[in-house]
Amino acid sequence: MRTGMLAGAAAGAAGTAALNAATYLDMVWRGRGTSSTPEQTVEAIEDRLPVSVPGEGETRDNRIAGLGSLTGMLTGVGIGAAFGVARAAGFRPPLPVGGALAGITAMASTDVSMTALRVTDPRGWSATDWLSDLVPHLVYGAVTYGVLRALDRRA
Image (cartoon, rainbow, N blue to C red):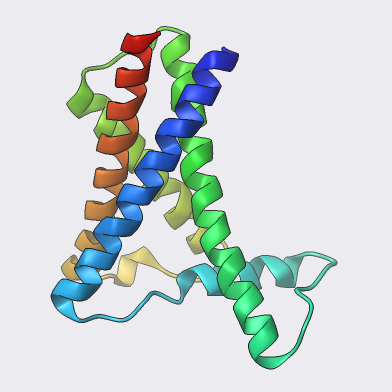
């Protein structure tokens, strides 16, 4: 199981890099700005905890932006690790199915948490909003599960 978890974490890191690349390509293609939801999520979590992000003004804003990015990386690596454990336990769907499941799991984990924190409400999203969220997560899933399968074959 430990090997599966480590392989999954590495696969999740690769998937996270691919998700970020897909997101940045979308920004270039459409000329859209960055999403503020990671920072809003950090602030919503901060509101519910007995700690706060230190600093004022730009210093604090930069820390929150960094924390928002780090939480995305942690989510991607964590979901990859979970899929690695599942694969080590015998869960081995074909690449299209495993990739879609990994991508949808990552998307659901972020969207459900942001909805619970009242950062966003997917019921009000446009078709473009949904695609902007879905496509990078499917890229994440395909890369994560593909790397996980490749690492498994080498073992």
